[in-house]
Image (cartoon, rainbow, N blue to C red; front, side):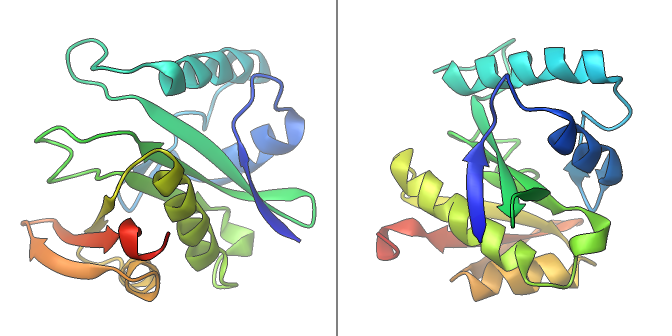
Amino acid sequence: MIELRRLSVDDGMDVYIMLQEIPKEENGLMNSANGLSFEEYKEWLKRKYADSKQTGLMDGWKVPATTYWLYADEKPVGFGTIRHFLTDALREAGGHIGYGIAPEYREQGYGKKILGLLLEEAIRLGIDRVLVTIKLDNAASKAVALANGGVITGQTDERILVWIDTAQKS
């Protein structure tokens, strides 16, 4: 069984271990929980949960974002984050959705699955078009975005810009 679970301040060791397996920075995805002690991770969960409850810009630049865990057969295999809205900077690098799969679970279809489930959550958040920005050399993420209905609409020096119309998915 595959399911998406929203981050909770009560998340435990299983999620912590998964986050330690996903690199701190890879293909443009930032995993700020990598390298934290378990106690620091518990505080990180509280901050991330609070971030999801915000409504405007925080600290003048940070947008509200909600984090989710992808579970397969009751084991966390990846995570994803949905930014509730975009700034000009996020329209070039970052987009609405970022996601990562633990290395041992890659190339098993979990990337496609997590993006599809995150798009369903984006609909619930009232986001009618989702931007995913992908590093130019990340063929796997490009394939995942296109398989989920993405359309390449542009490119920067480092990334392709893929928009997904969630209104067609609802």
